[in-house]
Amino acid sequence: MGARLEIYGGTDRLGNKEPVEQISLKAGDSLAVVGPTGSGKSELLADIEQLADGDTPSRRTVRLLINDSAPDARVRASSVVATLSQRTNFIMDITVQGFVDMHAASLQKASGAWAGEVVSLANTLCGEPMRENSLLQRLSGGQTRALMIADIALMSDAPAVLIDEVENAGIDKYQALSVLRGHGKITVMATHDPMLMLSSPFRLVMSEGGMRSLLSVSLEEKKCRATLSALDAKLLYARELLRKGGTVQEGYFA
Amino acid sequence: MKAVIVAGPPSSGKTAVVVHMTRQLLAAGERTAAVKFDTQSSAYPDLYRERLGIPALGGMSGYLCPDHYFISNMEEALAWGRSIRVRWLFIETAGLCLRCAPHIEGVPAVTVVDCLGGVQAPAKMGPLLTLADIVLLTKGDLVSQAEREVIAFGVRSVNPAAAQYPVNGLVGTGALGALRAIRALDDVASFEGRKLRHDMPAAICSYCTGERRIGRRFQAGSVEKLYVPEAGGKGANGGSAA
Ligand SMILES: Nc1nc2c(ncn2[C@@H]2O[C@H](COP(=O)(O)OP(=O)(O)OP(=O)(O)O)[C@@H](O)[C@H]2O)c(=O)[nH]1
Ligand SMILES: Nc1ncnc2c1ncn2[C@@H]1O[C@H](COP(=O)(O)OP(=O)(O)O)[C@@H](O)[C@H]1O
Ligand SMILES: [Mg+2]
Ligand SMILES: [Mg+2]
Picture 1 (cartoon, rainbow over the protein chains, first blue to last red):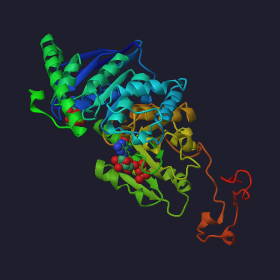
Picture 2: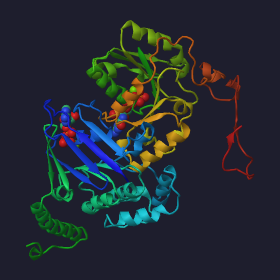
Picture 3: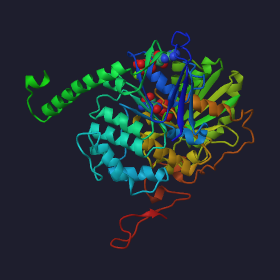
Picture 4: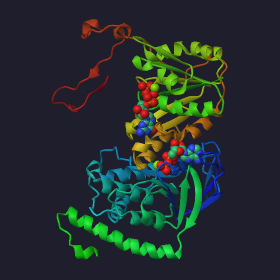
């Protein structure tokens, strides 16, 4: 997919020019958007979602190019930027298979073949496996998120994915990010999770509604990521153990 | 003046999207007003006055067919807008029975589709949806990307010519794109002599004129009966309209 996302800086909440003037992301890139609550993360995602043209409060301009040209407004509707937030839910009462088939049909993709693939990918993201004949409305929160991400990665034509603070969803979020990137999506993600911040090659720091600085993950930080990842694995292990009714021993966490 | 008809099922988010578009317009210094047509109490224009401080009128159809009431009052609404010298006039109307549509030839026609209505909704909305210039998909924040795409496909299937815009009625994301598209449509000087895009059903039976009692005795005019197959016969599980 030859997609490119370009963000041109505007003004912060106080009306001052944003220090970051331009960000350019290509297929498979990901950008972590970080900053305290109220710093402007969601506003930036909204600017991207509606491809701002100097006409939002931030005066930013966002361009999404597919093979070097802007997508037609008519196909733009729901198919250029995919979004995922904590509020997103399935409303259909149907099996996973039926759901995927219906999505495939709407994208004029051959039905039948996709459900198996989507389900196996989803099952790599979530500890509790689902089946093709599982009912959407019976899926756990984690399974639901996992299915949404697998479906976006494999099925959706949208070249860019926006994720707003989907941290505690009970899925392997690092794996989710790498799945999206691996399928050529441009992923922009507002997050408070340190591991997720370090899992993205680029990190955008927000404050006062403005894009303050753009950082790349340094070598030093890559080392820290490994350390944090080990800690995170322990946390995950403890969680699973305790959830299954087990007990934890001090030695393991030393 | 730019008059824009905004139609859609009850509670689909019509007011919400108009509020967000109006905020943009007010910020740009463009005077805006709103008219709300409805059957019952929800014809309150207060929402517009309170949230935006803009002039607003409400029209309640009461026992009249709301679509008939709507279309009989179009010129009055437009004249009011002109008299208060606004640049934009949003005319909000609930979609009601879905048998007809309030859209008028040459007048910007916006229809709101609620994503919570489900993936079949576009196929059920009839002329209200098929005759719109611009379709706004609300409440997409609450459903999955896949369902949004399926609904967008459903809309495209019944109205391929319409431009579709997802709008989040709560926070206003997407209202800008919608407004850009509406700006590009024609201004309207007068409704006189213009045509509805779809015919409206006539008042054809006794119930249209206030009858409330049930039974064949009270039914007059053009009355059609449900087809009920004989017990045990083929198709006993479902009738269809005769
Ligand atoms: N989550 C979410 N809620 C929405 C959205 N749009 C509208 N709502 C909510 O839906 C409810 C109905 O919205 P209204 O704008 O009053 O709908 P309406 O079509 O004008 O309703 P009537 O005029 O009464 O027919 C309100 O509680 C809105 O806040 C949206 O995009 N997302
Ligand atoms: N560049 C900007 N210009 C004007 N207002 C902004 C800007 N960025 C953010 N805001 C406003 O500041 C508030 C907080 O921003 P938000 O994006 O919700 O923060 P976060 O998601 O980081 O918690 C919102 O009301 C938003 O509209
Ligand atoms: Mg936020
Ligand atoms: Mg309303």
